Length: 310
Image 1 (cartoon, rainbow, N blue to C red):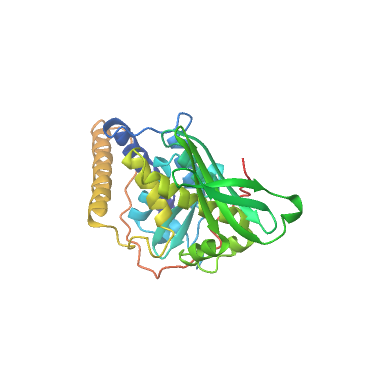
Image 2 (image 1 turned 90 degrees about the horizontal axis):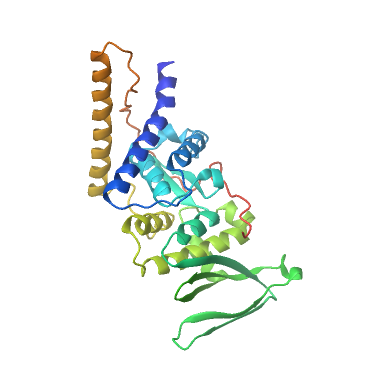
């Protein structure tokens, strides 16, 4: 019984921890969240979602995944202004590591937060569609013509393109189906049935991720936001992702965060106890999670929404 109570309290503790950290960043690092974004509601939605997430062996993510990876996933989600309640992100277990990944909706929402961005869009090109690319006077790639046809909807996808429209102009990124397949082959989700069953949405998501990475790395936006967007994108790829073991600086930062939160809880508990009142504080779990082998992909946790164009 005590075990069940501890498991129920653990994620609540983590969401409180992340929310405290976000508030600190807003006060000290000029973090700006979207106007209508409620970080507390998004974290509560993530808490409900995490209760359903399992690894490949059907073990609960909250029992298997490391403290650090859960905190980082929730923090990355909040910094990008995303919410699983809007199908903008989902959580996947790799070994003992939890990762947050963006949907197509999530990438659109995150890129729209960058300064000067007016419109973000991605489309797939089917066989026999009228599609033409070229270059402008600055030798930048442009999509000169795109005329999709209804009768081609069920024909093979031959490519995809993304558009990011800003105050200064429009940036295009184009990928052939071969390039998309090569990108999918480098992800940690090998033999991904979602890519097969939702090929249009996943192709748009892939080309938009590439467009976002190129655009973000030349922007002047906050390092907090751009860093979180880039981290989420690179985490999906074998050739770009960081080792499961946290980098020392990041691990130290997380440890300090956890230690500070625990001390504040102990101080509250001690203060309430001295007044003779009941203790409303929650006991921090220090349970260590055993190492597991890296899972390639957990079909049960990914939640591909019908990410039709908005």
